[in-house]
Amino acid sequence: MSLPNRTLSQRGRRARATGRLAERATLWVMWLRGWDVVAHNLKMGRFELDLLLTRGAELRLIEVKARRPGAWTTADIALSYEQRLRLQLALRTYLDRVPWPGNITFQRVSWAGRRVRFQPWESWDALKIQR
Image 1 (cartoon, rainbow, N blue to C red):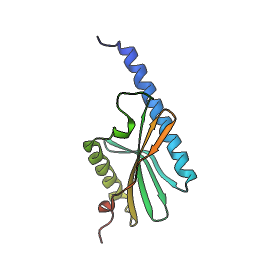
Image 2 (cartoon, rainbow, N blue to C red):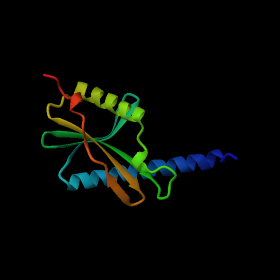
Image 3 (cartoon, rainbow, N blue to C red):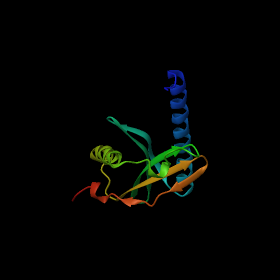
Image 4 (cartoon, rainbow, N blue to C red):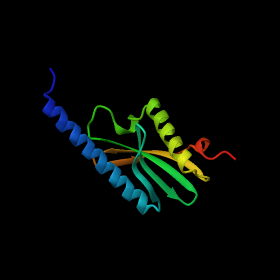
């Protein structure tokens, strides 16, 4: 049994609104932790970088995932290998335009309702300027 198109579009709008709210909340938390915003929802060709932040010599890409509480798949595991490659490609495109000499890191932030989980950050220094 399929759902009517109207129901699907309503669910899509709610999902996008939830994602935007989670991104905004993540941005505020990171700002309170001393990070400065470089870009928010930056479109790089077909791809989008959720949050680009800096603190000192570090540039951090943050991918925000949000799910409603009790969803079948949790936001903690919602980033596939192919999506990670697309994020690296988009960040590489950004870095070709705006080189970054400092450390480059990646972090995934997952929301389930009001519960937030900051995954451990990863070094993506292989993408920085090669001297």
